[in-house]
Length: 192
Ligand code: 5GP
Image (cartoon, rainbow, N blue to C red):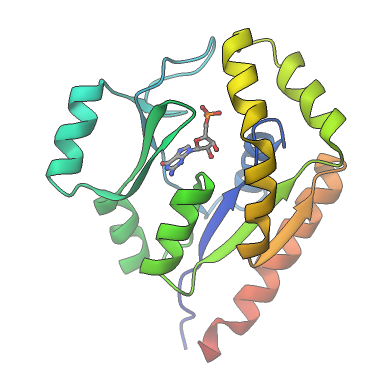
């Protein structure tokens, strides 16, 4: 009997290392489909359109909102971010597991639409470590870093609403925990 596809949602504050973990998870699970989000923020050095994000203008984004083309969207740190509806729905219809890396507002909206979605929050080992990771990334302006750090307390509070919290002490340990969560969820999808 085929199992239901998994919809895995990963969130966490800036600097929690969720981007790196999602990349490791995709390497470990090549059949996991990743939904590339759309954003109105500028690409960081090294980011590629259609790989990291689809980079669009405010007008394009608003037109897509009007057409109902987003499964969810949110304003995060002063820019718009959204998940395309048709891609994710077609992956799930064809039975493929999907990974979304989205903010806490988006995660709540996805959970409302798909109660079976597995919400995983990536937390940093400490606030000092978080600050160091954001600053050392070296790709953000001081204003961007300040804005992101200001959001950390409310983001950490949101962890309470998640199904799982993974503390990212090291990428190896956090990846192992993610894989275990997914393996356990696979084992239980027959009963959903
Ligand atoms: P960044 O600018 O660092 O790539 O992402 C900023 C925030 O936007 C992160 O919390 C990231 O998870 C979130 N984000 C990325 N894509 C989406 C999306 O499609 N929808 C929502 N709601 N948040 C997103």
